[in-house]
Length: 492
Image (cartoon, rainbow, N blue to C red):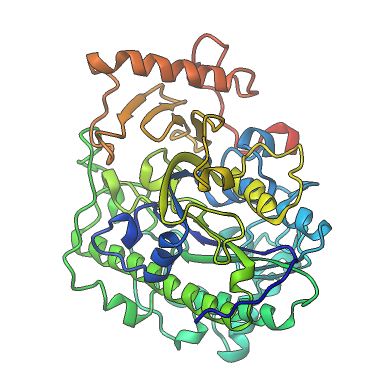
């Protein structure tokens, strides 16, 4: 039975993020394989947003949107680039700290410098295996993982000589997996929850708290516990969808590269990687359940507003593509759940919202839930009104997403029902009717009956990109071949 207490204090705020989890990997969303009982319960008793996206679907820019509540044009990170200092004056934890919250992050921040608090009172950090602060030939000692990563220090105290690369898996190896080799309590997923529980013990009890519980998994390395891998390794796993536009030849044999973005991966290897990916998600789900049990034991569950999401997805073989950064649903679309155990907000529980929401909406949502003013610098919108089921005529009509990614640099616009994609270096266009083709199997950009819609969305993107420093649009047409940059000049 849930412990109940009466208080007039502001609610606690719990933000749970995972890294690289696809939108469809929830049992309650109809996935035929994945088991997610605790996330299903959060969705069943809360509101699940079925059309949630990450406008810049890689770790760094997605987290900039979470921290600032801004669009990529405002926060300036339109691609993935490490080691660019984070100098944002107004952040989600900073605003909550100013409002009297005790603020704590446990897990992944992925900011620079790595120990930048960005408004938190304290950070217990594990960013995962990031190349830029693991390279021994050009990373200052004080920025190396040996110094900045709290999980690695903690692990080595318990397992002398332990390292994040001992399994031989790269941090971007989406096609290769093997089981975790140490006791469960030492896995980074368990560590995030253990440290979060410890925060409940040592927090200031006179203040409401903001806890960002930020997991690295199911981002590679794909290293699930054997018990979770056993749930999936012998199940018939459906093949990923492959569109009529996808490259099926892979003449360069890119699929043999364990950190590939594309290609034909050997079938057994791929199915084992998919099983491991699903296993990591179920492990995360159980550990989230563990934390919620302890939150209840502390008498704080009914006093806490909960948001769960992922920073971006994982293509996982869709269209023979892997990892993220590309504009397709597996990469850009994410799970997004709002839950209010104490019924403070009057949410329309058990409903599924179709409005397009994004990472920039997290900051205004949590500030709104906490009764804290939303700064004028924020571009996102609070989803609380949507979650209450009120009239949503005021909501956004579409979302513009993008990723500076060399020759694969792309821009896309979607309203959750249609999607238009433009690859800025080649000029290639794609159009998908997501209502009739949710797996993006047919590129309808040249279909006669789609031309009106293609023209509409092309014009939308032309307006969105007008005035951008890269020169992508002159207000009348899209301009192919402009130099893509990962960070806009105003943050450099």
